Every structure is written in C-alpha cells, then in structure tokens.
Image (cartoon, rainbow, N blue to C red; front, side, top):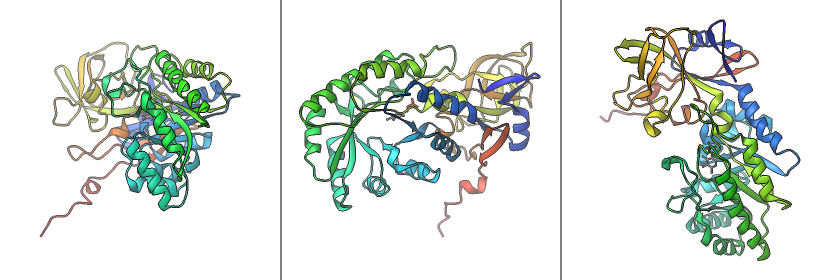
Length: 409
Ligand SMILES: *Cc1c(COP(=O)(O)O)cnc(C)c1O
C-alpha cells in the first residue's frame, strides 16, 4: 500500500503529505510511482511466457509523467482520441504499440493516427470501417484494424460504465461481426489484424470477463476457418479496484481465466487496463476551510473529483494527521455552487478548520475528468518517486482560464 501513517502523519511512500501540501498547496493530486509500477508488474507477471501486450488505457490518468513511467516499463497504450495519441507520443510512447478505441473517431484523428503509424484502429461500426479505408487510401497505406465486438454480456456493473450489452453505443454486434470482417478483408487499404472487446468498468469478478473472451474466441475460430487469420485478441480492461470494502478478484485471476480460454491458440493477447493500474496509486489532498454543523467544507470540489456526483461513487477519506478519536460525522463538501458538490457523506472524522484530508483512490478518472467549473483552476499533480515529490503538472492560474477568450468591440 502506497499510503501509510508514519509518526501519525499520512505519507505517500516515504513523503509526508503535510509537507507536500506545504510545498504545492491544496487541493493537489498525489501519485505513487512505485504503486503504479507494482500494479503494472501484476499484469506482466501473470502474462509471463505468453505472447502478450499490456496497453494502458490513457483516459484513466493521462499525465505525461504517468505515461512516461509506463512507457519505460514497456507498456503499450489504449487511446480514445487524437489528443491522447499526441500525449502518448509526447511522453515517449510508441504509436506502433498503441490501440485507437472509441465510437466517434473523426477523419482528422484517423489521418493523424495512420500518419503516426498507429498499431491498430479498433473499428466500432461499418461506417467507421468505410471511413478508415478512405483515409488509408488517401495516404496510400494499409490501416491495421480490429473490430470491437460487443459480446452482449452483462458486466454486472453501474449502467453508466457498462458497455458490453446490446443496447450500448459501443462495438459491433456479435452477430454482425463476421460479415463485417469479410468486408474488411476484401478492402484494399485495410489490414485485418485483430479483434477486441471491452465489457465495462469496475468489474469485481473475472467470470463475465472470461465469458466475453470465450464469446470472442468463437468468432476468432470461425473467422480462422474462413481464412481470416487474426494476430491479436484484445480482451479489454475494466478490472475493478477496492474503493470501500469490495473484494475484487486480482488482475491475476482475470489473466489466468483468459489464458485458459485461449488455450494453445497462437494469438497475442492484449489487456487494456486503466483503473487497476493507477486508481489506488493516487489521492486528492484537500484542506478543511470551514466547519459547519454536519459539514466539512473543503477546498476541493466536484470540479476536481466528479465521481461522487456523477456515479454516487464512494471514496475513502482519511485525516492526514492520525487521531484516536473523532469530532463528529460529516458530509465533506466543496465550494462549488451545486448541491451535488460533495466528496463524501456521513463520515466519522476528527477534523478542525485548517486540517488536511486525503480523498483516497483518486489515481484514475479524477484529474482526468476534472473541469474548470466555477472558474476554479485545476489542481496540480505530484508524483512521488524514489522518496522525492515531483511536480508533474503545476496549478493553473486564473488568468490562464480565460486567456483564450476575447471581449468583442
Ligand atoms: C476505458 C477503457 C478501458 C479501461 O477501463 P478501466 O475500467 O479503466 O480499466 C479499456 N479499454 C477500453 C476500450 C476502454 O474504453
């Protein structure tokens, strides 16, 4: 665990969080490089001896320092926009080990990705396949593609983050995939290289994930007999983490099940985890501004961390200075002018105005989903590595927030 008390002060690895708050101010995101590396290694170890790639899902946390760290460890990347590809390249990642996912890729994004030598475009509809063929023809190259197939599996998760059922916008229906593969295989500027799926996020159990892989493999075998030989099987991400008291099966259980399903097939297997790599490697450091009966008003808000407001998500909150007793039960709320602006509800804590709190499990979908609502500058990000706290994104200034705006004459 990257965050522990030492001499009654919560630390990120060896670095005390009150020192980080002193240096960089609050609110502030703090990440542990060692924890990210350890989570990556869990996948790597489980996949040892097998042709495999781990393509970190950039949207979970796209800070360049996080991407650079993972690139150095040998990770590939899973992206959902041209902007994310630009980040991967800026961080020293390789386009050839990057997959481009997402339902709404623009012509400009496809052009950019192909020019940079993207490893694979995950096609989500026939219209998109036609568009990729046209862009690839204009560039006189062959676009490597996979179809993202919707296995119609219920991932048993929150409807906003469940993506594998028939009525979601994602993927090509399982029943239509074979026809589309035949069409793709006949296109002059398309190189069919793989198949993919992603059934949703925050999966606590491996069973639906493995079931989806098995559905995918039925198709892989059928295509194989039809002479369409795929090189990779991308089984997606979505492996859950503990936020409260859940007991998610570890990545190793997901990997083991997938490898068993694959058996002796020669395909390279690809995982694209996001949350399970970075989620519990980060926290949001915030200071109590005011004590109101029943409330702790803190300096972080829903613009910094929208998950509680958006999904009703539960984040553990810990006092940075450890205390044996509590001073009350509080809703922890931010300064934003919305009733949904809360970080946590009904938490027994020891807190006074000026105290520091740590909102845990903020490594994934926290800073990445933050906004400037209420003209609030986004928080800085600090990476703790080898015992040092490194500023990897500085706090925005207020002037920067309206620097692109103009008053008309
Ligand atoms: C978002 C996404 C992921 C990562 O999901 P996590 O829940 O963060 O692991 C992986 N693959 C695809 C295609 C995605 O859209």
